[in-house]
Figure (tube, rainbow, N blue to C red):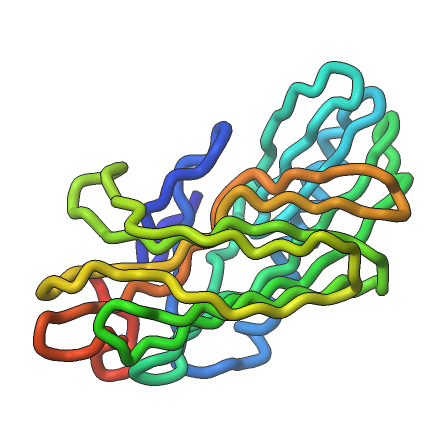
Amino acid sequence: MIELARKWRTSLAGTLAAAFIMASTGVSAADASASTDASDACVDAVTEASPKGRVNVTCYRGIATVTSKATGRSKTYSYDEMRPFVGYVDGLYRGRTEDDLIYGTIENGQWVFRSTIFVRAIISLGQYQHQWLEIYWNQKDGRDVNLSINAQMKRYIYWPGTDVVEDSVVYTTSYYSKDYKASKILFTEHSDRQIFYYNLTNMVVKDLGQNDTFPIIGDIPGPYFQCYVYAVCSYPNGKPVDP
């Protein structure tokens, strides 16, 4: 995995090691296509691997998880030149992430079903210890699905693997739909010069038409921000914090 300008440390399931993020203050055509390019290469990696039998597959950020329908065992794949995930900081109090989550089924090396969900997370800062996180997703093929997401508020610790989960909320519905949007509060610790980020984890797609479930293995971390005792949480100078 190629290390670029910003290293984001967050636990990933299975054989994943770390995800790297390069922040931007604007949206360019290259930025907007980064997630799509990674997803396309991810699909190519799975196709080339030609898993045997019937398997369920999920792809995002160039990482694929293949789960055997016969045994329930999972394996991860990633292509060699994975592009970095690109997050955005739009000012002092707004950060976001955008991802395409591809899921489907392969049988004897051939895709028999494949679809995509676009997921956007937007965090609104400007408070001392109550930060709003909006989750929006859209089923790009118009299918009825239920995507559940556990959103964590994590406090950065300078020693690898020790980041602390300060709060977590679940975004989900009891029904199937083609899109979804909800805003909830996540708490941050009210102490000086602490660094935080939201982290999307334990994502699961349920597709009504397929009558099947597709777990997304891996996390989506957001840009780092700073909290203070005598000032509200923010992205200093409208940029992500570099720990």
